[in-house]
Image (cartoon, rainbow, N blue to C red; front, side):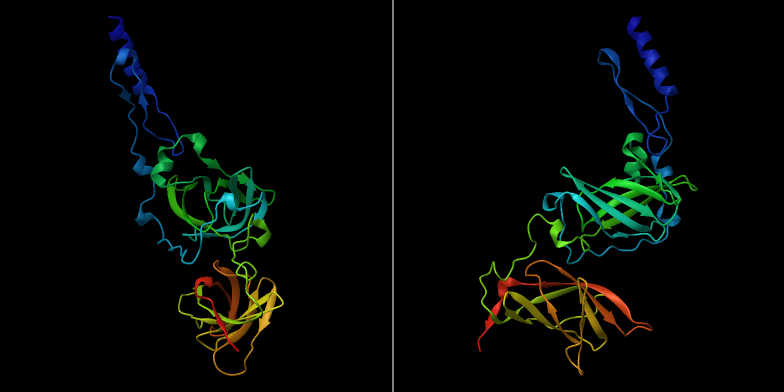
Length: 308
């Protein structure tokens, strides 16, 4: 009789309990005494809490071609301002501070709006089933904007993020890429590049394959590129596939055209080989001039010296 009473009490408790997680409704399993079968609480469908594809604008595909993931093991402790790509214009990040501390990376994302109450670093389904403690509520800033401080597994790779809408009361699935482009070179524990010094190069002229990524994907540069090393300073002659570029930038240095006719040609400083180097190129092909972000990667494995 005692076992029956305990079972009945447990079933009654399971029927009355509604355990609320991130999405305010989630099923859970209650253990039963004396080896009896567990009881699963009944809840409304988690799927109802997640916005369907028909309820969301078409997501933008995040392009990580040419990007190498950067993990916490590669970075020095500190705070760095970075950019974040979002798959949705409805989840716009206007500023982001990356904090690297004691083997962990977190990002404080300042939002372009105030329409989301909390986020979860995962899919919408995972968010709806998660415990409340695993969700990240917004923080209100002095200017009224909202920020979320989230864990970051790695930079330069696509990460799932679900955001709970204040008005719709549903989870909306997003994807984010926390970009490493703006990290200063001194943020890295070791240089990402294979340097001319490490390769034992002497002053002179060389050629090396170069890979361009970024922009619309239509632009190309001549490969292999001509390189010149003098007094430890490495430069490359970059020849574009069109004449539509009027200047380039490497870090804060603006580089003017090296030719007057033909395809746009520039002589730019090169930090090293075997890792993407961020550059800007200004195109005049559009109605107004526009700076476009690219990366150039010089391959040391096929480096060849040009004999005089």
